Structures are given as C-alpha cells and as structure tokens.
Amino acid sequence: MEHQLITSVIKDGSILMVLGFFVWYFMKQLAIRDQKIDELQAAFIKQEVQMVATIAANTAAFDRLTACLKEIEEVIVKTTEWKS
Image 1 (cartoon, rainbow, N blue to C red):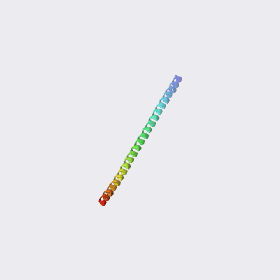
Image 2: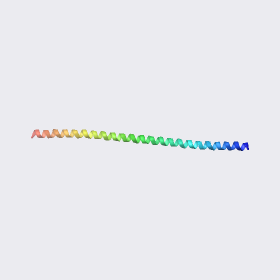
Image 3: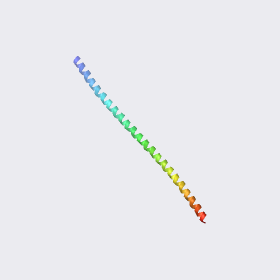
Image 4: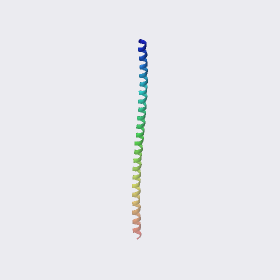
C-alpha cells in the first residue's frame, strides 16, 4: 500500500513537472511573441516618424523653391519693365 502511494505521488509529481514545463514553455513563447510584436510596432512607428519628417522636409524644400521662383519672376518682370 505504501509502495503504491509513493509510486502514485512520484507519478503525479512527474505529471505536474511536465505540465509545469509546458506552461513555462508556452508562457515563454508568448513573451517572445509579445516582444517581437512590440519591436515591430516600434519599427513601424519609427518608420512613420521618418516618413512625416521626410514629408516636412520636402514641403519646406518646396516652399523655398516656390519663394526662389517668385523672386526670379519678380526680377524678370522688373528687368522686362526696365528694358521697355
């Protein structure tokens, strides 16, 4: 009787250890997956910020180009008026 009790406790303990290992393994996999998702979200946000910065830089460059073209136009108009 005692032998059966000890054997069943050992078997139950082994089952619990195996179950514990699987729970630990799946929790670890979930943590790794969550970490990868966080890294992907951070990379996506970084890419969006870079895109917005590029758009802002392009807009600023376009505004400078427009201002230069207006100045050139004014010079051409003044030169044309002066020659007339």
